[in-house]
Length: 295
Image (tube, rainbow, N blue to C red; front, side, top):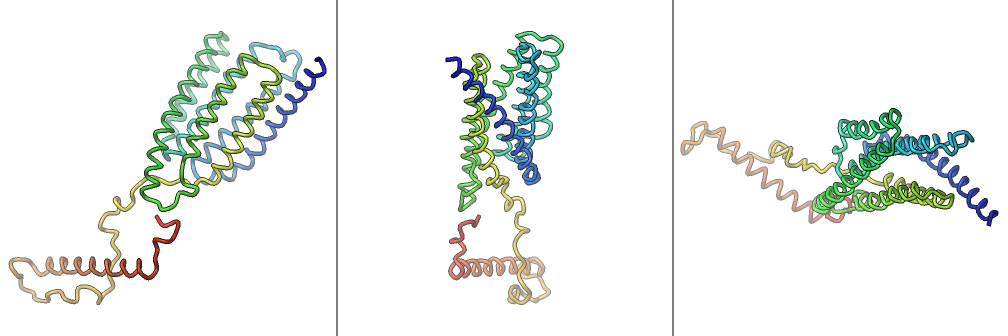
């Protein structure tokens, strides 16, 4: 029995070292991806903070601090500051531009406030409030991500002829599955054993691997109707000689309509007719609708 417990403890230490190296590796790898868009930048920062969280736990290797309840609680309060970064990542993935710097800073400040409060007054109610705040933040994120993901998917289905690497179903699934990890963490926090810690670290690596790989493939689509913004001014110009040849050259008004206005109306009508003919010819000859990535 004692040998079995020593084996499990050794496995837990092995997994702790493995998960620390795992996040160090992904922090380095995500650095280059962080320049791609804000979503990847937030994921990089979240991974960097998570790496710091695992590295700081090395303080428990000191025998004098190994069984310190105060340090254990303080470490857990510090770990909770990680959640604003991850929540911002999920929200940015399904609604680009939603996780602004101001909103993120406010969430970090509120969560970090409990770290300072615990340093001043290390009471259990401070720890409880810190966990309660993280739970509220997680619940808000999950509900908002589900709502935004539904709207995002509808936009993609309406405006794009392909869904590869632009749909956000993976974001909604990863958001739900990952935050189950949060509650597993709470359970492990209350019922800490070497086996529960080892399994939690193993589970974390599996979930994060899926999250990293899927986020790298994802292409952010800004849900803005550019055609509406451009308006009629976006019509291509018609080369000289192809339109306006039938315009009235008389300098006198006809039926009370000035010559310039008649010429503009005629030119626009001819241009629309020409564009319609060109579009029909393009669809018949080139068949652009067969292009899988035609928006």
